[in-house]
Image 1 (cartoon, one colour):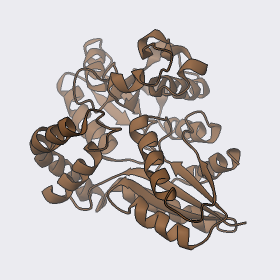
Image 2: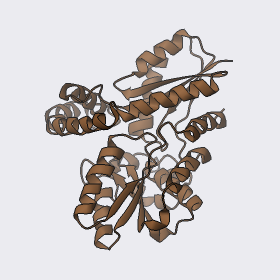
Image 3: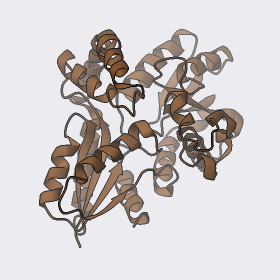
Image 4: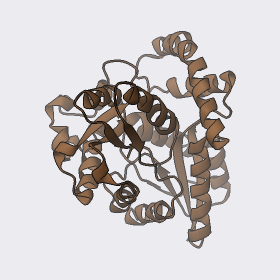
Length: 337
């Protein structure tokens, strides 16, 4: 029985030019699971305020990425990861990759998968921690397309893998490549979300703040992004034997002051003022290096940290197309069969 596996990452502009970045940002930000306000207000906010004010600076940042990698690293690594999976596990599986926003598109890949008449389709969004704005949006979009098929094969959707041992092991291994004892503090920096997004997770009329998400996963918070981030950190730090006073969890890439706290950039300032001059950052929400890791952390956050007295800020690389990550993907798939 031959199975198709569709790996899906967030996406990137096709090229680092204003027109391409504008298209990418528009598709991304007009997603109602990303900006969850009524359509007309979202249309005005995105097209008249957010994009006009951000597109030029965003284009400059994407140009920096292209200058380093020659292309989008997120697409480069996802493509390479898929190639390696097909080379190693082609007997039973055929791997495809797509981006939720822009190219290669989910539509094109699902169209090809449909014509191949596979017995089973496995959809794996490459977001370790479930969030409605990432995993939820990706799953919903795939379902809309598949619902139009005449022949619907067996479908399996993997909506998270934050607690899968093979994924955790990969980040532990990457972190151990650094001399951990040489750093004053380790930050586990996750992509931020509006607080209202995690509040919507709860179906019992409570808020995220009411559910002690920093201290473990239970039934009521099992879909909470914040809870998953803290649990991911716990699983990694246990293997690294880190003392709780030597690490903390933060959230980056915020758009306003009503996003998940503490913020990565402000926490770095606090650490510098406390005399913590050597910081190691781990970003377990990103399985591929991208704008948020290469530019936001390794360039912008690092420059700000050094400016206020810090000596060193290092970033643990993402999993990218590492061989152990290739095998971990297969482990994740098999554990969900």
